[in-house]
Length: 302
Image (cartoon, helix red, strand yellow):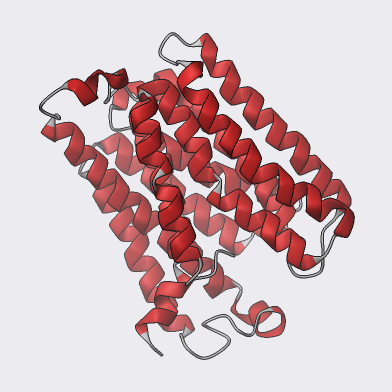
């Protein structure tokens, strides 16, 4: 029962993508004002502290949420995924429950260091994650929406670095809601093979996400020219694996499409972050992608 088994339960490569959510929300909040921040000799310490607390919060929330996913799936995994830490005996249900509880508590407490609103959003994310782990994932329609709401809430958590910005930019959370809903639809075929209707529906939803990001050009705070290169990279990362999975419907291809979709979250966030805070900040967010890819070679994403 080694420590690595419990780290594996946390899916660390996925956690890096959650940090990208926070960085994007932080940019949209106005805590960074376009590229001018890069020309300044001093970065506001309060803003930096808020960012670090929110990053710590999302590590706890995401880690705790996925740990509880394995807790609730322990019996099913003994049949479908016996190599997972709990069914293989490398981790226990009790140990995973304790770890998940501590991580969720850490997420809420860290968010509370920023504002009461941040703590409320973190609590809502934790509740939403537990609902998904317990019941939500078993529902064909509400399950993907439930998972998407967790990710949308995470983006709101980043925006809450400036609490008043949440009311102004709440609708940005709809983009990850739609995107994660699409990935969740695709992931249903990881074990037994993909459903063509779900896979084709995901292609449509991916298109809606890209259109939604482009539509942010209507905002005076958003520069779509900074966003475009990152958006093209995002499209390049998500469409080929998904289109390959549609005719084949093989579990291996579906799993690759899911993995690509999860990691591409970083490129999606970079495309929006660049639009709000300049291409330099977009690159900073995008640098999380090779980190996540490296970790994904050591620890499973799904």
